[in-house]
Image (tube, rainbow, N blue to C red; front, side, top):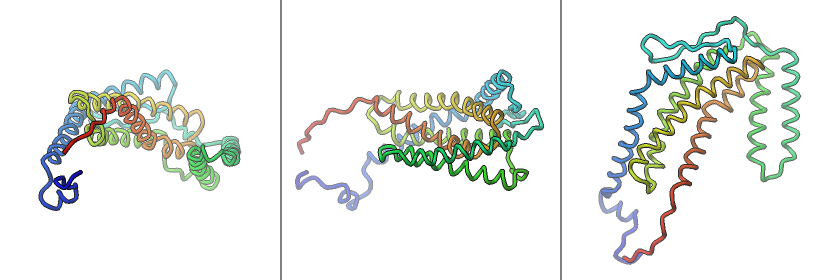
Length: 253
């Protein structure tokens, strides 16, 4: 940088934002609006697909919950076919407490290299321990059922899909890739989540019915929206790693 080249703070202080800032802002709006418009347009068919997929697999897995699409095809309601609450037994509580103690003790032997894993395991153990204490103390006052759990997961998952295009427009949209890739990739990521989310709900419903609702808190906090965010970060990191690095060039001013 020579005497004739102004730094960014100096240029910002002298006048309005340069044209490229407004161009990037307009690009962010367009790259966000196209996938969001598509998501809003296909919402009825997306919910139809989710209902069909969950119903088909729930019959194979003999689950007690079923999705029901309302007349306006704007939301899915989850209903239970059986009155069982899937409350934990004394044996389940005993094995859970033993498993929590074992995970806590064994994670103490992890080296500093595995500190993030140790922290994650112990955090999940504390969540599950709080659920065990609750079911030991007041098991009858647990306010959630499997159908309510799935309803919340679906609402949060669909809401998270609305956040994906703006986040990708901020990151993926700034990379040096062709315009069609900037528009196509967010749509493909949305398609991935549209296929992944109902399978995640199926897995959690199967686990809750075959284990018990004792595991609902740890599944909700550890494998709900937090898992969706982790998957999104991993997908974006993989996409960014596929972009060729620009060749460094010396610029003469």
